[in-house]
Length: 255
Length: 300
Ligand SMILES: Cc1cc2nc3c(=O)[nH]c(=O)nc-3n(C[C@H](O)[C@H](O)[C@H](O)COP(=O)(O)OP(=O)(O)OC[C@H]3O[C@@H](n4cnc5c(N)ncnc54)[C@H](O)[C@@H]3O)c2cc1C
Ligand SMILES: Cc1cc2nc3c(=O)[nH]c(=O)nc-3n(C[C@H](O)[C@H](O)[C@H](O)COP(=O)(O)O)c2cc1C
Ligand code: FES
Image 1: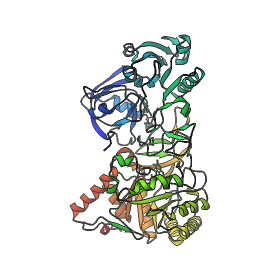
Image 2: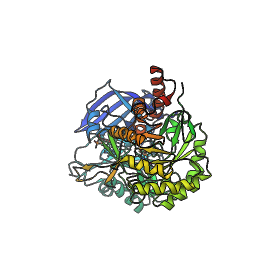
Image 3: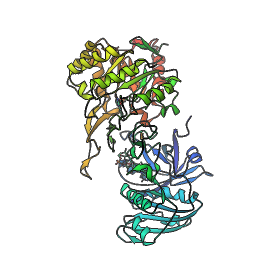
Image 4: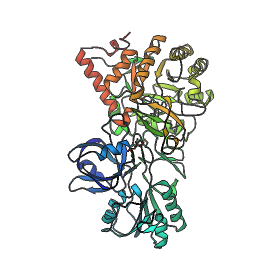
């Protein structure tokens, strides 16, 4: 049987760490045992009128305690339901899902934008090379202090309230950061910018993508991204973000 | 206790299959359920050449249901024959292949390619609402239903199931047209055409604007249509639309379906198919039903 079964987990902590941003720890030994940075879990709502599982990235893994951490933003009714849950309550979850990041490189640039920041934390922890961490926010910052233990942190905010005014690419250019590998997760326009930057500077880049999902395991073909070459599974230029991704090399995908 | 049913001369160990497009070719869900426990696996629609499908977003959740506009992405019949049929044949289950095309010729080509293959039945999808040509266009006019059914019947070596659209005024008329064309069985319902608007972005949620509604929200409509089709024709029927439990499945069986298919429920519960199989057995035990066939169409 697959390790990614749908199972009952128990919330051990669920707290608001910034406006509308929550940090949740789940007691989920089976998930934490298998989990890698960049993978995600599917969370199920209790309100059964909301059928589909909500994909949320794994932010931290504590294998010793059998726990995983998720950091999520209230984006609609499902995440609002999660935000209202307390420690000791059950949470149905399936995972770990997806491929996750490949740990590689000597000098890395970790780039997170908005709610794409959480998965970079476990990556920062597990990546042993030199790390520069660039975090992009609209205005309110979160998690930035936790990154400081793993590398030098650079911040950009759209309103200029902290760090570089602008986006993550503006911060990278301002600080003239270089690297032999980029890891990035964030909104598609940011990933497009990262891809362009990586191509221009001939830096290898792993990008974590996002799309609306139904099955989360590669069966429904709901969550595809366009690829440069014909994919061997689909036999067309589409890959499944939930199963073949969410992490892809920049040159593989069309954004 | 007998749970086996026979449709068009093919015997299935139990009346539960998967709804096309919700289960791939069984590979992914095969990690969650032993495919040999299912009466049959019904595969994603397959066309003569690979189809890339629609742009994203392809999925939108709605109250108690979901809209999809996958656009019949599939790897084409060659890859299907070389990869998916051998995979499914490793299991002790029947294989129903869902067939799509843009023109009658394309449907015929796929049916001919599958004629010499080791598959048990063909399900002809003339009811997909998410492609511009073909699909539903064939399923909304009784003359077209009759004509494509009779063309395919001439070429098919396996029994054919015509999959009907709920997006019609009179389902009985379509069922009779398929029967007159020589269909061996019917399946219904495919999805109901729907739409969702994101009021914050003031835009359609799906790139395709419209999508097919499925899941628990459509079940009462599906049960009604299965009942009407069962009363219109003598053909066996595979009923589907919102089935998530054995109780749901039994409603379809009592309305006249000889088999049932589990679709959207797989996304919510990867072992839903198995739970339906086991729940039907439990129900039969509870009420002392010896033969599942005694329940088919028992509510008149
Ligand atoms: C691989 C992956 C990882 C993710 N990781 C995180 C994370 O770590 N933290 C976080 O806050 N968010 C993350 N998201 C986004 C998160 O899934 C959505 O914000 C969430 O599903 C919204 O659900 P809702 O019910 O609150 O919103 P609603 O808008 O009410 O949801 C309606 C439907 O749309 C889907 N949906 C809405 N927004 C998105 C979206 N952006 N991406 C995918 N599906 C969406 C929902 O799953 C649901 O099916 C991730 C998405 C993906 C695909
Ligand atoms: C994501 C998705 C893909 C589908 N793809 C197909 C398909 O390829 N061919 C087909 O005949 N029906 C397809 N359908 C329709 C289902 O087979 C079924 O008729 C419908 O969803 C109703 O059943 P349900 O409510 O149990 O899902 C698809 C449905 C969904 C949700
Ligand atoms: S969500 Fe079904 S294939 Fe990715």
